[in-house]
Length: 217
Image (cartoon, rainbow, N blue to C red):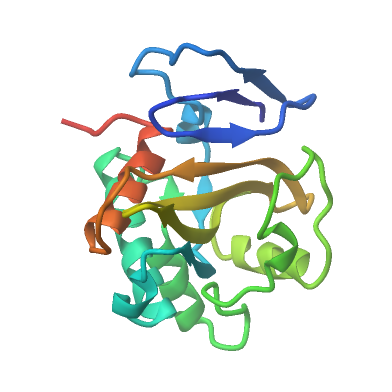
């Protein structure tokens, strides 16, 4: 599967051009209907929960936030809701689905909310970059509970900002679980906010889903 990448000013999506990834970067934003990850819509995909929450802002948002896992659960729910709105529920295994599947098979698979994902937490990886253990085995075990081969992994959500304005940054990685190889990585920026609120999670989830498909009427 090949992924086309477009630098979208409205979203701020960044990634690496490589043999299986075509980069189209320009100063002018493409039409609003451009969806850099639309090829994913036709695939069987596993969407994992977000693993890490980092506050890298000077706004004091961390003081008003719930616990990291509680807030990430909200982000996961918003991502699931946004993808359902795009009609992807039938072919895609969403974060809540894989959590329930693991709970029905105790001892078989790792907790999908607590994976050893530090190696893909920061920066961009070359297409074909080989995952290390134990993450490679963890992902193969999880994907075996689904019909998917590919994983959309929102690894980390960072909240950044200064001068009274902040926004979310979601680090995304697409993985071929059978080969334990990275296929694409990039960062998605949310809209600017002046205060910490549940709207941040809903906004970044909607922007992620917009990269893939339009809402179903």
